[in-house]
Figure (cartoon, rainbow, N blue to C red):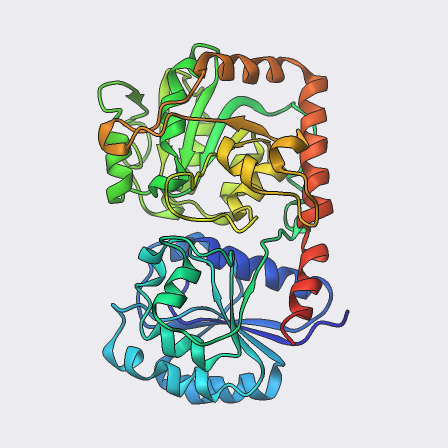
Length: 424
């Protein structure tokens, strides 16, 4: 199909998270088929992870420039997708008038996009009910009404609008130069790439460190920021794990996730590649540049993305996260048992568990305050990873199946035309 000209609006600003990734991949697909797509980012509130996405081509504008931006979108684009709105902590003038001065004046079909899973995230949006009702409809991951989910919030706040699902996808050509099916020249390492929010279950990586280290695996976490949730997870292992520290880097690394600067962490990645990493040390690194992070994931034997909604009153909406798709394309991926049991290959009755393509890890759901999740059958799980690593044939087979799955079900060329067709 011929795609419409798409204007993407990020009114909260540039964020280094799933919202940014969705915009990144949607624009890349549009560019690949010579269709017009432009990302408009409002400058109002400083975002801490903005330096992770310097690769993204965007048009920044100040609120005073809103009239010219709206005029341009109305004249040059056929569809507007609003991926974020100002936060309640934004400036008063923006919060009070962005709906009337920007959204209401967009003439083409316009859809709000909500990619947040939990009401604690989207409830921080300013004037969100009015913003949604000003649009033609809203897209979200799941239509299931759950205790803390988006559809429940819409119902509670009596939001009157059309609601449709949105699917995640990956623009695979982005990573073609990094996708390898072979075990070599990867290193015997396992990586977690993601934020420290509790339901992403990054602490499983901390729990796996010692049994995997005994088998010669190096464990690394990247993007694990020093947030409240991050501190809790790291503190649970203080005195139990030996953190990577060094005085040899140009800035002393005194503990886990020492730097929130993406450029500094890029230099730290390169420093580590010149050193022999020690399996007995746990490497925890903060925010990362998108392209540099992808290179790092591709260099690891295994990538773990163990998010779980089993006890969070949430629903996956049959969706991967982008970091899960990255893990699947670039390494041998590991997911949480609950995710694999409850997500199905699109258009089929085959769960990700019964597909037999992806590795599974499970835990006992110990609360973070009580020490965090403990991996079930940790020795058996670690032995399985070791056996896969030792078999070049098995390793390649798992890589082939994983990459084929993404290309068949989750590639941008498969998902985007179907998505856009439902909006016009």
